[in-house]
Length: 162
Ligand SMILES: [Zn+2]
Image (cartoon, rainbow, N blue to C red; front, side, top):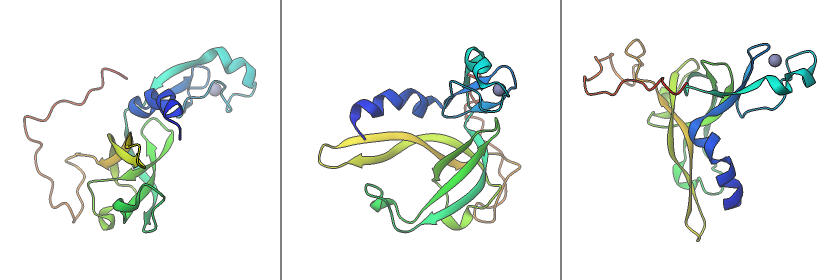
């Protein structure tokens, strides 16, 4: 991917900015200019508004990748998952900070911004979203042990941007 194209796409990569149809309420990520759900697509053109995903969701499906694509060799094995966000859109992303065997369908996750890969000798580093297990005290797997109270110094979730 060219640097120019990467930077054009950066706002949505960093912010999880999608779009929402104000007619039927369906949300999209990446953003769409036309709502494919509304019966008369053309009428939705003026009804689409920017919509911010919270980055929270759960694993819908996943696969453990052992043969990495170019640029991802150092990360194998890694988990690639389909994550259904709480707002509705399904995102594809890597699950990090979790052992592959700890990932399961239904796992609650939260988007985080990480280095995706470095591009060759130019040293271009791409960043984007990945997912980590959510710090929901009601959620615990055997791999993570029993739930523990969240430390007081944890910053409150930033929902003001939504
Ligand atoms: Zn619609």
